[in-house]
Length: 203
Image (tube, rainbow, N blue to C red; front, side, top):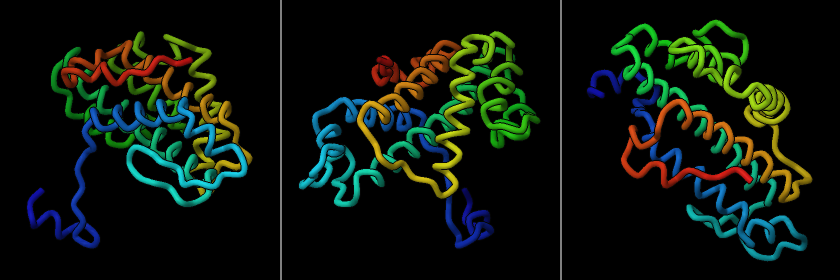
């Protein structure tokens, strides 16, 4: 970004896309953490020690910590899917500037929900067989429920509460299944060599 365009942004802040490999590594580490003794201990009262996480040490309340990594996991997926579709679209039909521009705002695909736009319409625009709704209708319906009952509240002032380790593992397993779908329509090795190392196998 040029200095001139940077000055046009509020506060002069500069932005760039998060590398897709970073998104996968972040989710991979969070997923692995949830199956560690440390995660179970964090939700077992009385919790006397801070939560030791790969990226930081958490001294706050456990519910706030698990809310934070859940938000990051969902946001990471929502960033990874358009990035993957960028590569997929180019491989299938070459450069398509109108489609790539729409990927920057999933709601430009016309649906009223991000699930419809991001997991059905956007991939289906490349080829109907890529749609999550077509490939795995039950997972698509579960995603609709997860967005309505978990994702949307988490991004509008809600937080997780009264947590147990099975429940939070369930959310991350669902996200992992959505990554399985993404990988089924585009091999992560085509994005970055070695990226498939950061796949997780849903329990």
